[in-house]
Structures are given as C-alpha cells and as structure tokens.
Image (cartoon, rainbow, N blue to C red; front, side):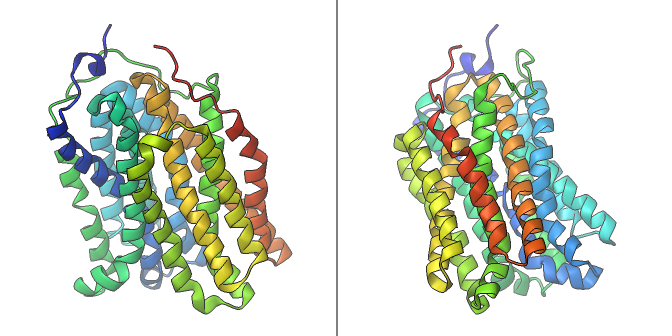
Length: 396
C-alpha cells in the first residue's frame, strides 16, 4: 500500500516559493493569537473586571491547550491528512480568537481562549507532518526553518505591533483588534488547497497515539520542555525579577530585546538549517547556552542580566527549531504527525508546569530568583538526554 508522499512527485523549484509563503503564514498564526493577549490584557481586564489570575489565564490557558490539543491534532492527521487538519485547525483557531472579541462576559472569554488554544495546538503537529508531502527530502530542514521563522515572527508581531500600530487605527478597541488579527487566517486556510498536492484523504489509516516505545517521543519532548520552560518562564517573570533588582524601568526595553532575539534566531536558521538540523552537537551546544543565559539572570543585575536573558532567548529559539525539525527527518511521513504530537504534548506540559511550580516556590520564599532556579534545575536534569539522542533515520 502506498502513501500520497510516495505516489506524488515533489514540487519543482518554481513552485517552492508559494509553498514557502503558505508555510510561513501558517507559522505566523501559531503565535499571533497567543501573544496578542498580553498587550491587550489591561484593556480586557478593565472592561470585563478580570482578577489577576484570570488576566494571566489569557496567556497561560492557551499555552496549556498547546499540550492538551496535540492529541486531537494527531488523530485528525491520521484520519483526514495533514493539510486538511491544518486548514480545519486554522478555522477552529479563528473561531476562538475572533470570538474573544465578541464575548459578553468572563466565562465566554475563557471558553473562546480555550477554543483558540485548541486550534493552535492542532496546527502544530500538522505542519511538520505536511512537510514530507509538499517538499523534497533535501528541503525538509529549510521547510521547518521557514514555518518556525513565521512562528517566531508571529511572537514579535503580536507583542510589538498591537499597541503602537494596530489599536490606534481601530479607535483603541481591543475587540476590533482581535477581529483584525484573527480573520485573515481564514484566507490562509483556504489558500492551503492551492498547491496541487495531498488533496485526498490518507490511503491508509495510521496510528495516532504517541508511541511511547519510541525513545524519541519522550526525549525530544523533555528537551522541548527545557527550551519552552525557560523562554516562557523568564518572559513571565521578567517584570518581577527587574522589580526585585530595582530596575523595573528597564522592563519595556528588556521585553523588546528578549522577544526580538527569537526573530534573529529564526532568520539565522533560514540560512543555517541545512547545516545544523539533525546535528546532535548543535542541540547540546544550544541547550548548554540556554542554561548559562538563564543562570546569568540570577547572578547579574540590570543590563548585564537583560543581556544574559536575551542570549538565552536567542539560543532557545535556535534550539526550538532544531528540535521541532527532527520528526520529518527521522521517521516515515505517516509517523511524523504522531511523533510531533507526542513531543508537543510532553514539551508544552512542561513549559506550562515547570514555571508554575517555580512561581509557587517563589511565592512561598518571597524571592523571584527561586522560580528561575527551578527552571535551571529542571534543565540540568534533562540536559544529559541531549547527549544520548539517536538522530539516525528510522528505516521504512
């Protein structure tokens, strides 16, 4: 029995650019719906009278859904194929993201945020599963770098353009801002069907639950947790850390450079993906530098601490791309979505829970540095896994 990837020729170089644009745009919508919440949170909180916990949940709930929704994404990939899954997930994301701009109360706001997070979570395994069907084998690394560049650009765009550019054009309406950010994704979902490939359902139904017997599922997932817990955790605690050090006035600049570093990392990976993806030594190096950068925020203060955090953000962005790009390279195309979903399930569960545990310990101790120490401690525990990764492609 053959699969679509085996029966359809890869796109010609002339057709690669439109495919790259679609991958990039889909990547952008992996993060804009999530990262647009923090700049809009004060306006939403004022109108709907949210508590501090509910205001924080506008960002943390979708991150939790990134873990919970990985398995529905894997199931959909095995039943209707990665392109159909990606298009369906984008529609679900738009319903939740745009729906937040129409909600009348707190309950429906949280419900819409959960729906949005589910859509984004289903998109995540669909993109790497789509790469082998749209791209030739030697284009898989650059394909991963392209959509990950879009994702990291989406982080920066959502956080950086919303308040100074978009809201003033929309009469400072947070509801209209959410609608304007969300609805164009419907056009991207429709455009996914333009490439003349992968139109049919899968020829055979493949397994969709994580293969826990495959050591890559847990190992890549634990390393994704290393990258995600430090990036999301330090992003969340940056304000408290600078306030404790007496440098709170530097927060705006710190967050700008911290998030911009990931954009620079993704641009570098567009150039270096074909050389670095699949290299265990690069994964080890970026993991070590991530730990060093995070540790620097504990022992340094002011601009040196901000520089150290920015270094961590930069190398963590590279590490994220190196890890996410592995499934299409290491397993058969019909197994890619399953492996990606399993690693996202583990990775984003840890990216949510490790910083949360650190925050609870910091609340108890009264020292925000203890929250960062928890993230560093977790990362040191799982770092040896990077030395044991078997990155040889599994035989068909």
